[in-house]
Image (cartoon, rainbow, N blue to C red):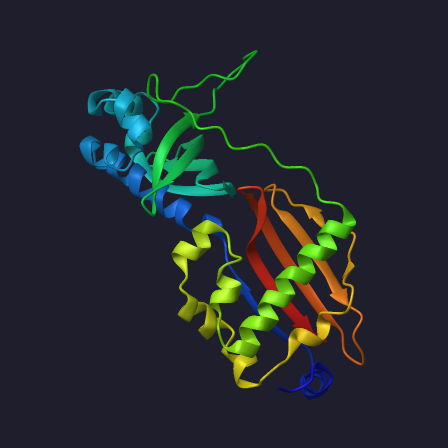
Length: 272
């Protein structure tokens, strides 16, 4: 294996080297919502209902869905623009605006649940217009609303550093053993379902081919930047670097909480 110092020197000759793989757990949410709203626009209400969760189907008929779509202008759906996308475990949420065929804009919030590897509509809520003293749910009558779990407590600085070391150690082991099932096991559940071990290995093929040994980071303590903490979507963002010389190893890691564990959403390793 090449030592890290040798690899960093070689990379430094060519300038900054960035190798990153970004996994967004929200990747399937817009597609699922778009499919649902397109069914409404086509007035295929049974087809739209087929894209909803079991709870949704149990409380909403195709006729009720049709009435909801007509009364809220969703039968004229043209496109969507999502300002917020988030996921926690098997529950996802979208917030944004739908553009309809007459040029109007409909602000909505959509909750989805994952079942058998597929995102299904659990709740659609249109923001109320005019003055109000409380929010009004205009989703199909009696459709249950899945609550997105509250943001967990922020880990201490020591816990954050330990999490970084755990992730980078798994990454190093995957490279050294040419076995990315090690890193794959640390991913959030939606990513494990969306990317295979082979695809993960292909993403980091350069590390394997160059025999980069990141295990030299194991005894070092990472330094965290001030921006580390919860991001706007409630995910844990850890940004910082390891005190390596002559080059610096920087990282950006993103996690969500699953079953009392922090699971990886994003890994970006930067060598300057």
